[in-house]
Length: 555
Image (cartoon, rainbow, N blue to C red):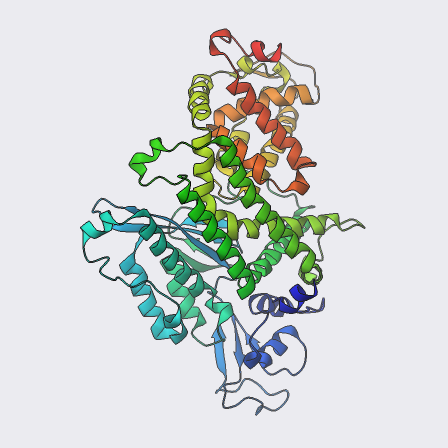
């Protein structure tokens, strides 16, 4: 624990710190000794040796350090570092490479902006694009040129050579380009402060398809491509005026802690540990045949289910261990962050269960970003191939059930939705089906389950005198609270309507990757409901369910 605290990038932040200083401290915590004056100013400690302006920080140039009189204004010779356009933590991974229509090797880049929680895919990039980016950045910041970069070595000049490359060679090049891109993004923290940080950020952010825009004086991310998914985009309810300050404080605290953990993974010892594990896991997956030699031969891959589950469990165990290491070893830092006045609106109990839960969620999410995401392809193939037959079968059944009315699923008349539970299905489709991280998928399962109760209450309140019978108003009905026996048929209905791809493999993924601490709580309960919905559909005999699902509910 002591060692983790010594190497931690988190500053000790006073609760009286200004908002602007807190933002800057969050961005530049753990500066190099050469920039101690800037750090002192940012943290509000000794010597106001630098000053802040709108969207940036000014500090004495190397030739004028210590020459300014106390209380004087910014010297013209000071160096001004603009920060407004700099995203604090963009996580990037090159997931794979593929041949485009011209037989050129393109790379799929996955991105997540911790500040906003948005994840997206960058425009397809080629080796020459990376080479041009490196050249442009090196002219701005010479340290970028020192980051290892793959040479062509005869590769890239011939289209036929790209098509003939072995899977091992393609993986090596993908890994090298990913290392370069991640190091370039991390240069904000690894390198020295310099006046061209914003220019470097613009090049990098444009390369992955994002920018920073001003909206009412606040900076927000702007994407050139559609967002893959964000938790605020798939139907979460808007906070009430009463709960909005608390909800905002929760979101901001979680993201601040997550940015802190992002920087932890930049520490050389942690980075080396994670990189070694990821590299070994990828090599093992390729040697065991979990990764096909080409997409056209993917149907030839067969994986033993026990082997697949064992390999995924090893990855889960490593994620669990890193998560607990951060939570325990860096607890003092996390508490220090939570004591900023920006989070004063957080409503907590005497045991700080809300705060500690946010710590756990933030650490888990960033740990999955660093470990699960680079291994997602291997994990998916392990589970997809192990559950291939079940998913083919259930896909046929879900298609057959997709147009069935609510009455078919034995949903009680007084709880049938006028909207066909579209908001619930959308959360499952977007939050569970399209999001990347297992922890985000699990939160979406919980959100979908809670949306059932919220929507039912909302519709019963709006239409207190009638129910809704599969498209037509009905006679007045008795008001009755939604019970557990009413919930499951609705959840099965929404599960079918969501049309989630490969639900068998997905259930295996969520059951394996779930944080053990959450299995006995709310998440574990609703995950069991999700699995039950899957099992009911999987075991359904369509020949015996012509009229409704009595065959499974009355069994």
